[in-house]
Image (cartoon, rainbow, N blue to C red; front, side, top):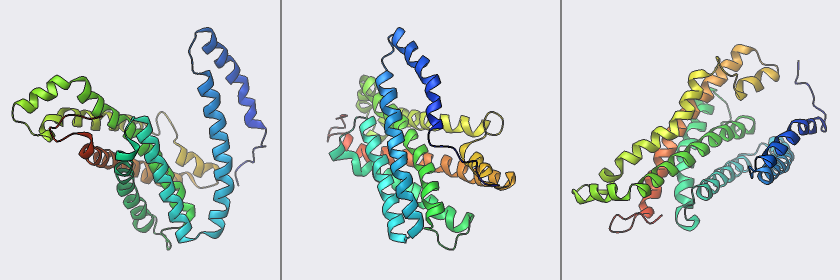
Length: 257
């Protein structure tokens, strides 16, 4: 049995709940109404455009086109992270892109080759959606981790300078905030992983079941993707901090951000 078709107009029924939410925000002077409207509008436009675009990508299923689209996704994730963390686009963009690209590309190709066993590891049906799931989770983790690292050093600058004064090198002096960044990055995904099946049925599994897959097949895919998300998120934050810190400090180990 296939997925139940949803008419194009029925998502607008959600406005029934959106209107009271915005009224409450207005009454309590919670200034997020404009951002809520903008976010929903932008999401809708982006998804519609991506939907049309992916139809042609899936139709052609060309190695070069698929890879170009994945690289575009990595670049977009890098740009979003740089902006959210208020880093210098000129100095840190490529460092963040590499922080995303290295672990996520290695993981998606490993999954397609050795876990799923595809004949074509660049098959758009697997390559693009799975990469999107990995990147989306790495994005949120990187934003949390990078902000925790640099904000922690900035807010505890005297403690950082004191550690340097005791003959610690930059790595040793920043180690407490580096550890805190890794923990902050990983806590949400660890909590989510621990409660899957008890609290929630995650998107990958739900989508497989709605698409007509057997529950056990959906579960196996979900285990694979959650393990991959956890691993790539962990290595992505390490790569991102290590690569951005090269230009984040001056010759005297003072934080420039």
